[in-house]
Image: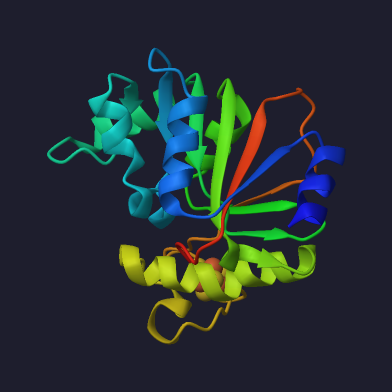
Length: 204
Ligand code: SF4
């Protein structure tokens, strides 16, 4: 883990290793001021942390596009506002031991949040670490995306059997989920991008 944190330092990314979900939650609440606005991406890891409710209950303005009962238009508006918030909270699909972070996205809202928010916190379980960038991309496409298609009911070739067939995963037959892919190799602005690594298996 020390090597990974050093590799991030060279990329202007600050890495933090914590033992448990509870410690991660504590850290996030320490880092984000209660006056800050927060954008979020859809993420099983964030759900497992229960962080959105905690931020909301202590007074943070969270642009929560998953609030129940809101319209599609309201949800889209919140995604756009979230992408320009003071902080953006998300998880990666995979990361390499060398320090690259990989994010796959359907509509690109998460990519917009990572690019535009004031500061970005990426929260990941250790199960998302891969030996190199090639394996990180492979994990994202061949493992994480099929599970996300299943979770979100996206009709894609991988939806049924978990096998990616990207050559035929095209419209109108399929609603492809792997539309936009972001690899972060480094961050220009100092102290803007943080990764909190949790010593647990979280998300997928
Ligand atoms: S390209 Fe299509 S089939 Fe392949 S993982 Fe992405 S959504 Fe699934």
